Image 1: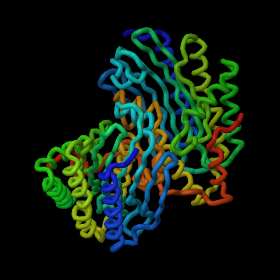
Image 2: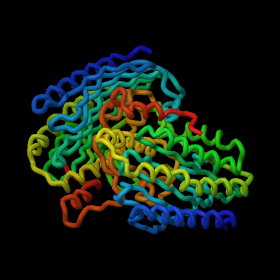
Image 3: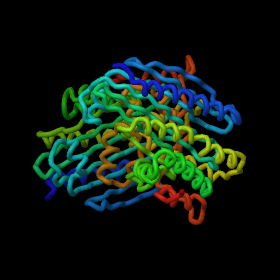
Image 4: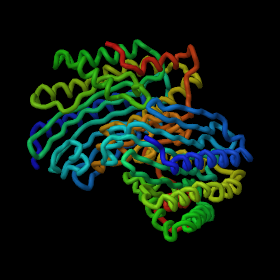
Length: 294
Length: 294
């Protein structure tokens, strides 16, 4: 299969975005600690820029990958197509800060191309805070709204609603965080959708760095930390039970350590835990429900 | 749907087994710390006897449940039948000791009955050690072998092979522990299979207590503890990605905290971790592959 010129442009874009983001993070933390370039046996590979026990971030990374070859049987079945040649490239970012006063963040943009000529964009970003700093949640959502609507009017409302449905743990009746945006199978108007995906990618720095800066030196309690570790358990539940990217990565034989970079480093799964009445953590539990933040 | 007399006998058996096991554990640890009797909205319920931060056990429990009603759509699809009335009862036990010198253990026995007259037994038990005490692994497997073969000659070999396939993380190319036995859809000879399931259930005490007794006061290092917490991460990966009991529980709207009692309490997911050369932990990594222990 020959890649389209759009595929190559997307590859170029994610490589640049990876560099921009890593350079920014490196400016105020010795963040990127391990680079790993990997190859996939069936075709393609990626560049994992991992964060492992840095000052601000306990774990995380900024990954790009471009994989191609024959579509794995299980994924073909899921997409309801015959198995055929495919190519998929994307950038995934995940940051798990050490301090419970700084939210975890996730960003993904991706492009998928099939032998039969079908192709689509997908992506999303969501915030997982552990402390009720409402002004941070407003900043995050307003920045996303502005970015989406600069390309597609009304798209934020739609993508925000999809994110409320997507980043959701049905068995808990809770979201994993306070959501953000989510979209998939954006077809037909490639030019517009590529612009949108670029806006979303470029949005990471203005939607997250201001929060990181104002929270990084905030003191926190042992209870704050415990709550963070318990909510990270929900993060693990979501990623292993429901997250499409994680399951796609595993089924398509991506590099396991790059896929599981998304799993938080230290996690608690206590039995039947509930926050104490009147605490900021009880307040946070209410915010893990769909809510209008923009 | 009326339950068969076999269903009632199985319910009675698991209730007795739960009591026997809990009484035994209580003899040398203040183990059972929280009892919780729960009801399922669509029919049935269970009794969770949870262990939460006791001296020897960091988390665990002995659960019985009997649920019935209309088979959830997703499970019907999986079993390739129309949705109909069903009933399922079983006992699940999981123990996550604090000391990395004591293995985690899991046991499950279950009976499933359908409106169309189909019914079957299933179950299994497996050991997840974190330190290469080979004699413990031999004791565990020999006890299982004897139990299985007292009812069905040659069954151990078959069930052991199935456990090597079942308690396996394909994305890692590793088992979660050193296996044990696994069986499902045992049909036709109800009397024999019920006896087998009882032998397997009764086998918990002789297959585990001797190990617990000889390891509980063994000193351990920080490296041992770290290795345990990392391997517990594999336990979480297995349970959320592959374990049928967990996924059945969630899809049939069982009580979430009772289902997730199986998740270890404290877990590490470091990036791209490998054991140091020449350590007991490097040795253990080799034992997480199918091996003849009996």
